[in-house]
Amino acid sequence: MDDIVLQAMAKWPGVPACLGWLGLDARGRWYLRDETVQAAGDFPRSKGEWLQHEKLLAFIARNYGADAHGQWFFQNGPQRVYVELEGTPWIWRIDTDLRVRSHTGRDALVTACLVDEAGRVYLVTSLGLGLVHSLDVAMAADAIERGLWEVRPVNADELPRAFGFVRSPALRAEGSPPGLGD
Image (cartoon, rainbow, N blue to C red; front, side, top):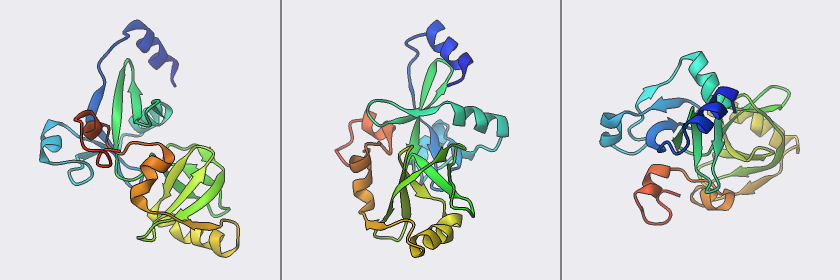
């Protein structure tokens, strides 16, 4: 986390968390979701404004993490901004040499490869579980065919519980039935 963020957290403890205002889609893109967008529906059905400012994206990437309950957030100064996830907390990009990097630019080592009922490819890594970016599925297939990554089948609905993350902290905060916000 940035030093300025840590200083703000110490200076202003107890700032209320922000829910529903930030989303991460299945291609690693961040979306700002104002009250109108949130009222129009849950993420990703109602996405909001695609964030493209490079310095803001870098700031989010440096201050992205998870709490003890598996809810992912961006620490914006003293305020924790919880993230609505379309799929998983990480979106993986794969280089031609099969190096894996997260949507936030962090390198990761692959420990397992999963494929769900719809053919989506996930990697379990040193950082955790993430979905392979749609543009990089061919490289993942190459690694699988070469025997570098052994595939295990998985049910996409079981991923949040199996890997300890919450797709929608906003729904969870509203007291949604188990499984909907988890």
